[in-house]
Image 1 (tube, rainbow, N blue to C red):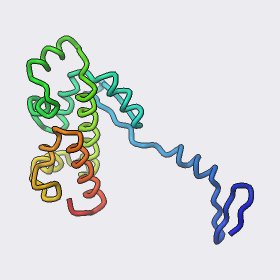
Image 2 (image 1 turned 30 degrees about the vertical axis):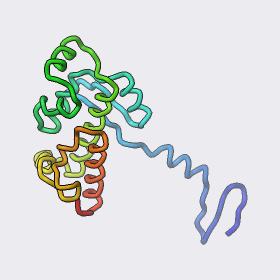
Image 3 (image 1 turned 90 degrees about the horizontal axis):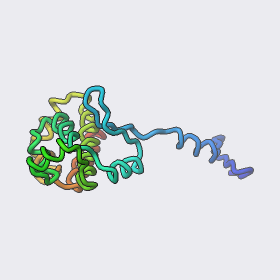
Amino acid sequence: MRKEKNIVTHAHKIFDPKKSIKRAQTRRSPVWTISVGENKYEEWQSKHDRIAIIRKGLPYSTVEVISRQSNLPIGRVLNFIGVAQTTYNKNKRAKILMSGRNSEAILLMAEVLKYGDLVFNHETKKFNRWLKKTNISIGNVTPESLFDTLSGIQVVRNCLNRLEHGNFA
């Protein structure tokens, strides 16, 4: 192994750190969106983008988006984020934005729902059935029942990750 000008060679392979950094910078993380039809509410690609959206707040109408994507009633999604139906109706009419905590929960749910759709090869009905079935690997509860906490949403995401990689989930 020899080293010259920041290039390391090993067994005929040349490693150039500048190329490696450039390659890493061109790789993109997925672009996440919350949209209804043609209307895009928000779009984010990095954690920094997500934080900016959380701080700004999401409109209450994004609850309907999550409701449609998860095939859950709006009331159930509102229970997950701890908002009363009357508060939701009033704030939606007044176009008030959700709190940071509620916006974060909605964004994370949107990510998990889109990721689940990808893991299940866009077979939405199968994914929605999976959300409603008890799952041994997450403590014999349904994945959707964990949407009421940020940690629970992460547990569902981890479970989907294991499924994607062929592990029992």
